[in-house]
Image 1 (cartoon, rainbow, N blue to C red):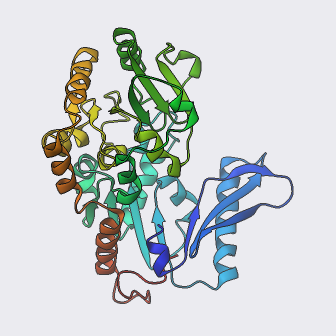
Image 2 (image 1 turned 135 degrees about the vertical axis):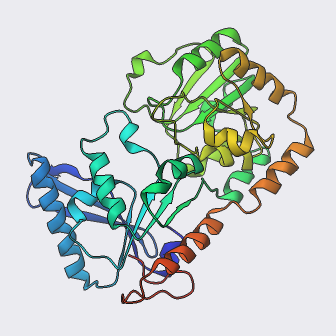
Image 3 (image 1 turned 90 degrees about the horizontal axis):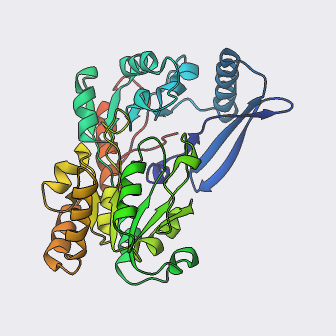
Length: 358
């Protein structure tokens, strides 16, 4: 969205807080020129139907106040379609990043809403190839876009950076993971690795969501460092010997394409993952990532990567693969496809890649 904001106004509408004591409102926070985050605040006691009605009214007021007649709707979740389906954007984009219906505590009706959204969308993007294969017959104009990277940001981890204090105090071989720790996270795998290899230090970065923190594995060599800012990640990565993707194989991981895979690689960190399909193909097939099916093979894969740390051929192969994998490349490709999808009888104005998106 920061790329689109260079050619127009982008308003990122987040899920509402139910804390308004007076009238409902939208709180605007300008993050960058052309890019604002919008957080609705609704009454605490409103029903689901009432919240959708209020959201529709707030959205209508938003456009009235700005006199906007030329806009693009970009959906990350079908749930937003429930309160916005009556609007008529010049272009409707559905960016399907996950099979959200498979997630724990998925909202009721999300499958039906997705079908409605797909029926109305002008163009659909998917967050990976496996997800594309699952959705490709649902729309005539659908395109896969696996995870991209901020190369310079993560490549900074290739030099020795000063480790943050909470990680620097841990000595020894460091295996790291960052991301949301939720129902996708293989707790038993981490517990067994820690028990079998007490000389390895496991660094876990990220919030614990939708699972009971009391049930997470606890050991002297497992370190929960909490949430970190995006800007801080390279300083943590630079201190890791191997980066981990310890995801379970279940309905919530069947279609994922972890963004952390290319980020870890751009940082020059060897990667060991469970056999997530979009990690196996292409990363493992190309020899860029090692795969472990269970604790024993996962540990063996880590041992292999620890012995391969100084292999210049591996890093050269990583860089060759990542050469055209950046958010700039993704933005340019998406914008070109959106331009092609724009109907000639509509008044939307697009110049260069995309102009006046909002």
